[in-house]
Image (cartoon, rainbow, N blue to C red; front, side, top):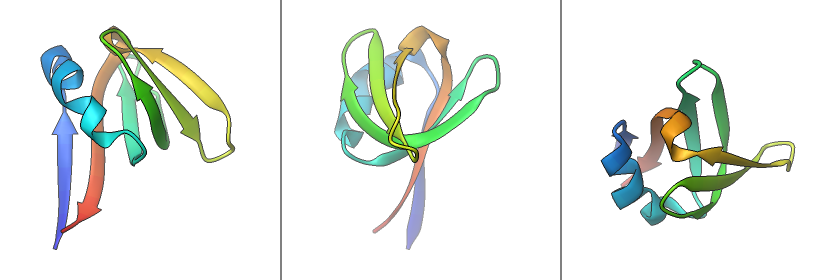
Length: 73
């Protein structure tokens, strides 16, 4: 069975995002740009991820509109 998890509030991002370290996630920024990559690190204000071109990005949590990921149970 496939499931999707969506985190769309600042509190959800702060509280749950660390659970998905090492997983592939989709990040939707407030300016509507979308990124896909592996979540590397998360702290109270920033996340770092590696995209499919192996480039490392850091994003402020306050700039994120939504994070979602698909997984199979």
